[in-house]
Amino acid sequence: FLATMAVFLWLAFRSERRLHHRAAFEHLEETLAILSMVPELRGQPTDADLGKLEERLTERTGVPHRILLTDSLFSIVASTSAELLGGDIRSHFHLVPEDPSETGRAFGSTEAEPWIAASRTHGNAGRLYLLRSGAGGDEIADQFWRIRGLHVGVTLLVFAIVLSFLGDAFVQRPIEDLAAHIRRIEAGQFDTRPEIHRNDEFGWLAERFTEMSVRLKEAVEKLVRSEKAAAAGAVAYRVARQAVEPLGRLKRHVA
Image (tube, rainbow, N blue to C red):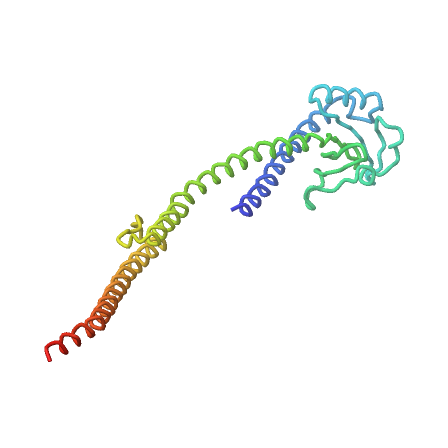
């Protein structure tokens, strides 16, 4: 049960994370489509233009965004960070395509935080990249595990209560009844019967205990009768021995 639940939770978490990433990518692509129509991005944008757009996106969404422009060789030609200019965007952000056949969506990471990226062609064989911080995915994961953890905890609690009830009704009580029956037999109450009427292993044991008590009662009664007969014979023997001498004397007196 626990192994099945763990597998189910893992699959549910992967599915929900995939849905979250899909929604994030769709949001990025829609935003990127709108940004491509902004006059500041139609030609060669300046660092100031990119900075203003990044600030607006961050303020609107509450999540850090980065906008970068690359040439046909994925070399960064426009960015708010001067140290990124001329570098390969794929190696700097460690971009990995979400799907090998899909070049517009990618996952990435830096030392500061993870990123998700969407891109589209821009200008003469260049590409316009919009990156969004992936730190929100950790919050989604925390929320998922909190809710599912509560669900699992409640399920285990109910499962434990049900098991306790079933164990008490179907295991503990029959064992206590059989133990009480054995104690009554030890006390000499051979007419006692287990109060178990079930069609299972405990019912079978109750029937065997009943047969055992009947046979034990018969054996004890037979033994008692044998002991009584033996005791009566011994008494008759002693009486006969004690009567020999008076009878002998009587015989002599008669003679």
